[in-house]
Image (cartoon, rainbow, N blue to C red):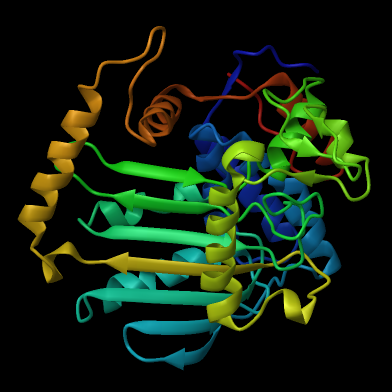
Length: 353
């Protein structure tokens, strides 16, 4: 049955449903529930390309063995403030939350804690992670890359070399936390796929085909061999996005020791997580005064005509809180996608209310 645009679902129903399906494919409850919560929170924050839309793919990966259902991360190196883990292709959301747990424990003794993970599976929406850390008054940076994926052309080229290589961070302040999650390309693969599914075109010509033609048609990327996404900044200032993309590859694939050179041949991720304690520098109070001052100056800036000035992540956090209270709004296209791709599973998809 089609669902009208404004039909809402209880977040707890969606989490319980997703947890049960992941358990059916072999995940233990704790691991399944962590993955489910991460996917649903992404949808509540408006990151629908990296929310429940990923659930059918995750289930398929568990079924085929691409995502490991059991086991734990292996510690490869541990110097107290720096830890290198082998994720053994376990679910990415589980591994990232385990890494955050470890970093929050170590930050009591070390001013900066860095965890890198090789051979993680996909880690879903990066924006869902930083708030755990900012609530403790700590800074967090998280980034990842898929060494098996080549979708983004370097600036001035038309051959795909890099991935979308997202960067997320959380910055605490006295009143308003800043959280951002950005790709180092003009758009992410999931956004292109979703745009095509909705029968729309991209807002701008973010795609370059293998003959150098710029395009805003998702099909030109999805169906044309050798097509690429432009780096962040596009044809004008894409050298900035390319530089950031290369930096992400160094932090993730480089520091973890597992990257493109190994040619993984499977869906995976290399992860870089860093937590910083401001108290170990100028001091927590000084840091919070500065971030609050900047936030207030930022929000008082005169807006452009028909524009609204808001802090990075402000809309996502407000949307999440509203939907946690009143129910998650699911678009008809996402509902149909899930209904089609999860029809083989029991229990049935939750009912809207």
